[in-house]
Structure formats: C-alpha cells, structure tokens
Length: 128
Image (cartoon, rainbow, N blue to C red; front, top):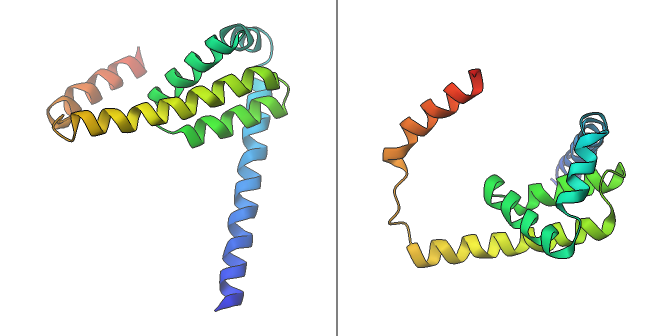
C-alpha cells in the first residue's frame, strides 16, 4: 500500500515536471519578440502588474494556473521577477474577489440560460 502511494506520488511529480518543461518551451517559442515586450509593458509598474493579475485570474478562474504560467515566463526570462510579483499579488486578489462575489451574490446567478448562446458565440468567434 505504501509503495503504491509512493509510486503514484513519483508518477504525479514526473508528469508535473514534464508539463512544466513543455510549458516553458511553448512560452519561449510563442512569446519571443513583440509579445514579450507587450507583456513586460503591461506589467511594467506594480499597479499595472496587480491589475493584469486580477484580470487574467478573472478570465482563467484559476490563480494556480496564473501562478504556473508566471513561473514559466520568469524561467524563460520573458518576464522579470519584479513584474511577476505584481501579477501574482493580483492573481491572489482576483481569487479573493471571486470568493467575495460568490458570497455576496450567492448562487442566484444562473448561467444555464446563457450557456448555449455563449457556446454558439464562442464557436463563431473560433472559426472567424
């Protein structure tokens, strides 16, 4: 039993490290040149970095994913550490604000009626 758990933990760690390496390679390839400059400009000041972190977290609904992406961008030197700190603070603030919105609004907001039209709109935008 303990050996099985250890093997599963090692497999999970190996898969995570492989995925991070793939993410770093993709970030290095995709964000060379202009995109790197845009990203550095978008997070150029601490306030801009926090706002960018909040916005990206609101769009992705995952501060963990934002953290992994920022880590990959810092690793491949697309993003400076000082810019990354502001984005991470914004990601944590975005997650906190999401929790507060759910608390205030509750689950009264039903996206069921909007789901089909939004899916259709997304499909149209994907092929356009």
